[in-house]
Image 1 (cartoon, helix red, strand yellow):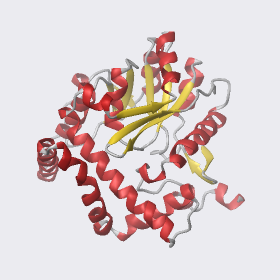
Image 2 (cartoon, one colour):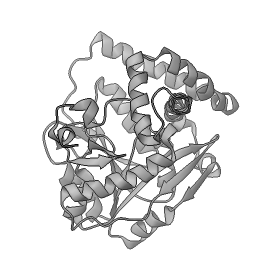
Image 3 (cartoon, one colour):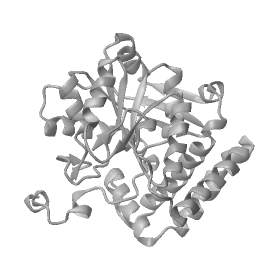
Image 4 (tube, one colour):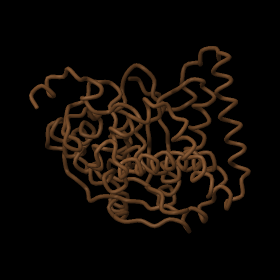
Length: 316
């Protein structure tokens, strides 16, 4: 992977296809419509869109969400208890997108007045130390609103964003995050993600990584909710390179408001990448397990689904 320091240094995008242009225009139309909704109306949208999304989703996707959330909750597939969580997950995911589309209309006062938190002092101490740190998070809750919230606490977050096409859509998401006060490093194929994040930490910032999905099929295999699962090694590698602590946290929704959750720091710099990633996995279990209906991983994530012939499964 190669990281460029700024959006302006990215290579020119390829010509936009008609399909990509249509996708971008669809996103922009939804963005504009969501931004114009009065807040009382917007607050009701996820409760109406979520159930429709659940019904219209492909059976393949719904089945995968069931398998994922069965592992998290312990509810068996086919039970009413699990199906209730699955429906709630679609509603939560609709809330995530609505919040993202409306982020640019929100003020700090609006977000802060509707937000509570627990464990935020752990990151405050990292910020005040001036030595930087690492935040590992998950696809949970309302990420973009959480980023906006953290900027009001001067956490100095830097995130990595994969460059997607159409480029205009990627630029729009980057604009939203930068407007929220979050520095964004574009990620393209090539090379030095950890090097740049090390620089963020050394400058006293908070390097932030998504830690609950491995996109490469090369991450270490750890136990995650009782089953072998690959998770990305970046958090553990960064801790080993910087010697700095890791905190696991997320920003979940609570009614029409929000709630920030940060767990106590873990020190994994002296562990191997595999051991450190296992510690991160255990911390993620505590976070995701507390809010399973807000975990937005709707794709294959565990070895049993992604790599059914992996030796780790045979050993079990």
